[in-house]
Image (cartoon, rainbow, N blue to C red):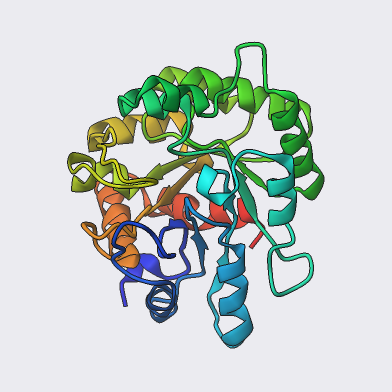
Length: 294
């Protein structure tokens, strides 16, 4: 057993079917997490709502100690950014009142990412973005739904400016639980977001060699994703404060270790940056349990 993993939570695992080769599958991920006495895992997928996969595991393996949950990334293949899509995700399960535990705005189909990937103009114009004047009516309805159900809002891969606008609007509409993927943000943006009591997510994927390899994430095209240096990561975590940080693996792509190994390696790397075990516990145990109510 890998000691760092005991009672930990990895809320960002890609093990569902994919157009790109995966390093693992959902059954193997569950087995590894259970054997290493992890507390919980969260499934993410750009192609479908993962709460159905999570409930399937719970239904057929009722004696698991491991908790498993899923949710919706509103990518076009998963139904896109729409109120109806979000609403359906909340009931997508084999059990009552047991659907999506989070709803995420798009990751790859945002104008911010599409521009970074040097997509064509038509593609960029079709991508999700948050206007300077604030979220659209449809986006606001989704935020109100998230607030009503008290689930987690994941802001997706938006620009720093868009993220601040979205978070501010979400808070004004009553959203309490917000997770912000922050791997490519700077300290200035972190400070702006801190006042809204959000959690900042940092993932192993962005410090790994996967950022150097053009990959297929949502279609046939292959693009690199901007990585982050460990020294920069240390500064960002300190700016955010470990009490507001969640570490995750974001593993599943075939060129990376299996999720439990990637998560272990990431925890070790962060620990070796000089963070205490108490601070590590906040980032891999306490904060995720509190945010996802698990």
